[in-house]
Image (cartoon, rainbow, N blue to C red):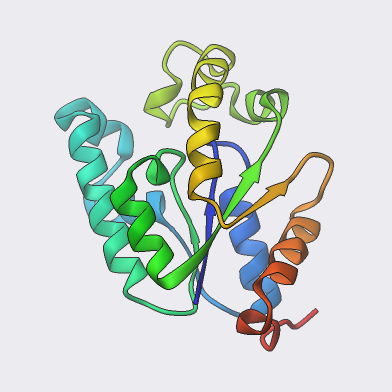
Length: 173
């Protein structure tokens, strides 16, 4: 079984995945980082080929990573907005939505120049995207983790508590 983390950009998916990896000894991967390794900067993909091509590449990475077992997968913010990706991720994993308040997301994303979807400013884009995406994250998720006020370790432990025996044998504390 894979642990799959979804949610808005800035919610802590990559950080929590790294913490889950530290606690369990399992490998963590980030779909966006995998795309960058194989295809170059995401901003360049968006600029040269558009978002639709980026989403095709993302689906290929989801397929590739989901064919493995025992991974901790941090998805890009838009990954689970596509039914195909959700179906693939659910075949081999449990999806956790890391829900964070808009203010937290904005403070973490302010000044980020690597995310094409933040063009126009973090506050504006978060306030536009969050209401549209949240219902889709909720629909995709097997479990919602409310992250406000929690450390990455506390979030990771909440996730592991929901995973049962599939991951608990690996916990190092």
